[in-house]
Image 1 (spheres, rainbow, N blue to C red):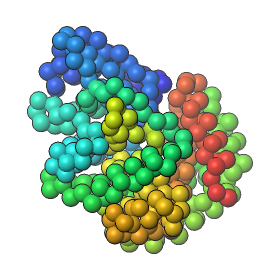
Image 2 (image 1 turned 135 degrees about the horizontal axis):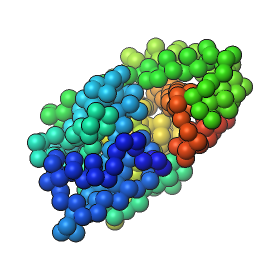
Image 3 (image 1 turned 180 degrees about the vertical axis):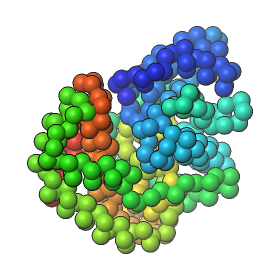
Image 4 (image 1 turned 90 degrees about the vertical axis):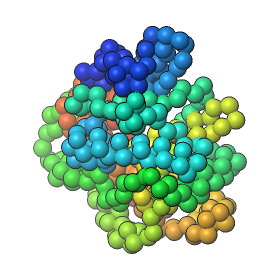
Length: 328
């Protein structure tokens, strides 16, 4: 996230880390990286480092409809990550460090939540970059292990196939004939969506048809977003980060990121490891779902009150890219 969270100062985070994790912070440096969460690199007075994340509970609609519901869903997701790493013994899961009360995530005021992770010197990939075949195979192997995991202590949240912000996208499509007044990019967003309204309508109809079939597939534990930006290379290790999207779903929710063809080498490798064939309709559905989710989330952001910030500019570019790359 490029912009800092509104109403959260460094002192708020420092106090939360002291009370929740007994970290005596010497330096808390905001890191404008990644998406979906706000990040700080923290060093204590003994020179030890951590990576702290702050989540806006109003910006994670897939976890719930209210701040309290999102906080509960986030806590459940982080508990699942802890169980996958320590009970299922999946070393590639980068899980949070428990607070002194045993929780994996703590509230930060009414609107935010904070979690603490080990600080690892490494580099994540870039969203949208193509992975070499060797790395794709490595991710397939990780996903096969994840999809076969059954940690007894985890209450894994079910992931709904339905779009989390479907009502926002439907409302936007229904109000293309009147001005949007949320901020400086509202009207450009309305014009952009209006030019592609028929295409979006066809995509929604296709999604609904596929969802009827895919809903019946057997669920497994899925990460949700195993794309290059969530792969952290630290020394000889490759870790899967950002587990707030974890949930029970068909395996294709993960596989579409790395399986180029349901009959290709990656799919055969996955089937050899798990005994489960890759479903081509489910791959299509989850590719489509990602595009429609992005449209829903970023359109909602630009219809709401906003200034011309780096995050707002990013939202508009994301709508442009999504509409240009979505199937007709």
